[in-house]
Image (cartoon, rainbow, N blue to C red):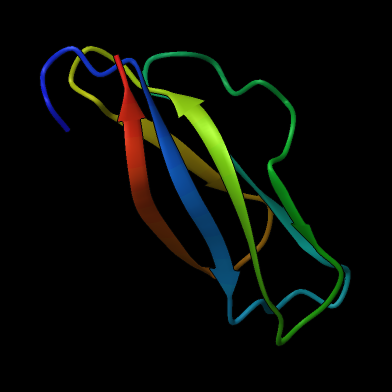
Length: 82
């Protein structure tokens, strides 16, 4: 990301989900407390689900991802905002 980026447009993917009760992914700016919300939810094991979303980033263009249960995560950056 270039200097001065304040947010990114990402495709957030959970794949290879394992929990029988589902789970979630949250993406948000680095250095900020977890907002307690989710950007993506799934309902069981063996799923691949995706969402396109925007998240803020810190001064170094870094964000955090939290998974509510075990899964593989893919984050594709589609664009950025200044």
